[in-house]
Length: 409
Image (cartoon, rainbow, N blue to C red; front, side):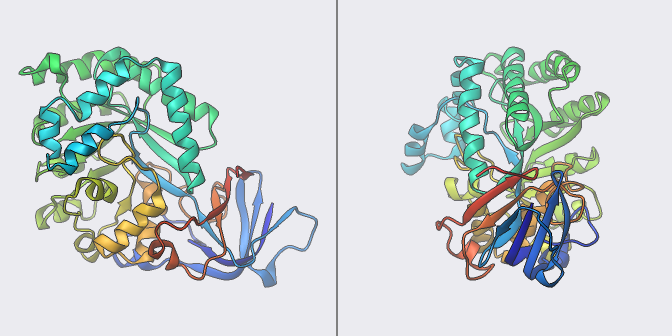
């Protein structure tokens, strides 16, 4: 497949790199009047139209349009049962996230719904959500469990994620998040639940190879640093990578715990100061920001500008879930990053593509336009400029989706 007459080919790399940090995040290389050649599901070549192949390769005319690497959404919870719009009304009335959780809402509400939903129905709902994110430009996604909180239901979620891997064109990474909340039956016995996660959940998940990563919600009212470290150590013994939900509601110590155990990413980071930034410097742990949650919950945004100016890399993800971010539209996430966190369009796009891929261990194959990478891209509608993407945040921009070298829509 040859895409010709591209107004602007975005996110080009001659020498592929694993991530972009600090000032390099703004160095988003683009080629005007470009072509992109796809062979056997991979990016074979690209350049200016003056050097385009002249043969009988089937071609798409992209006159007036831009081509982007697909978004890489490294933090979602999109396998869930039903919605939680009633809690949304509680938010409007002024209740906080923590107050809603204490009333039986929040994560435990989704746990009850999921327990009563069969695997096939859960898969059907999740399949519709994957189609939704594909249509808005996402080509790689991480999906977490965490609405099960018992052995059978955590396995059910992870098996649904495996079915999505097998039946959708998305590149999917699965994450086990059994430590998402403490179940009601373990109230006052949090350490016992951590034992259950380690001794009863992890072994069958590892045996079936259902998860690429293990995550922990290290936060006030959820899991302590000690709990987090116990679970991360157990995950590493099984050969799984680790991630941490960190510093969403407080300076919880989750960032430091994640760095200590070599987490591929630490996510949320709303409460991040100089100490946490220093801890992240010169590590392989990717800071992942989830501004959709801050928007939906009316919470202060994480300090993206301070992180980037200090030289850190930053990734953006949607946090698609029923309670705090019921949207998987990465283009809107890019807009929020620019409007609310003062990231430039170039920085936000790098954060939503290359750095998002890095936060899933996928930067060798996804996240940029580079020879040999997976040909997962989208072609926009005719657009006036790159800056139009975050600026016109509700205007549809995706015209054609290509995943793994195949036209999806």
